[in-house]
Length: 164
Image (cartoon, rainbow, N blue to C red; front, side):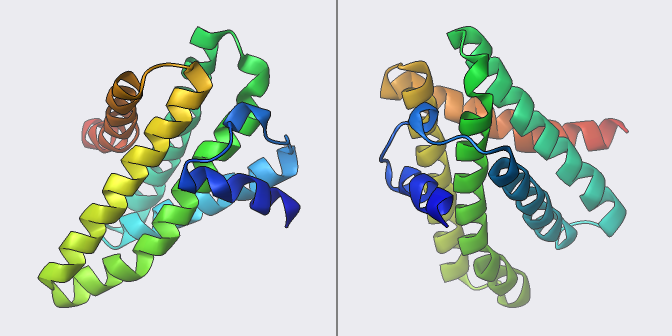
């Protein structure tokens, strides 16, 4: 519970990801949850086998992106805390979005689209904040890298699924 309390403020743009406690067990739990939540979201869009493969690809691309960020900073030792930061924030936002996605797929209400867009904007902003704090770069460059992150992880996984 203490680790959750340490990582959740990242979603509200507080703390530095590399200064948070490292725990391989907490990282693994968040990794499994990330995979499950992505699988659930994707299973609402496509068939279960494709959803499983795409969720695994997204998870791998997320971890690869974090490793590349840390490589450029020469801070690979911070992988566990940085990757956990990405996963925790994505998990919280995706969990908040689950009811909205179910609402959207069952009713096609316009308000659900607005809420989903707001959650996506929050996700981009949080990832930009994490990148800004990890690389110590300007908010503009962090935003650009955040958009690259979402393009690479979600778009890249989709593109790889098309190619497979």
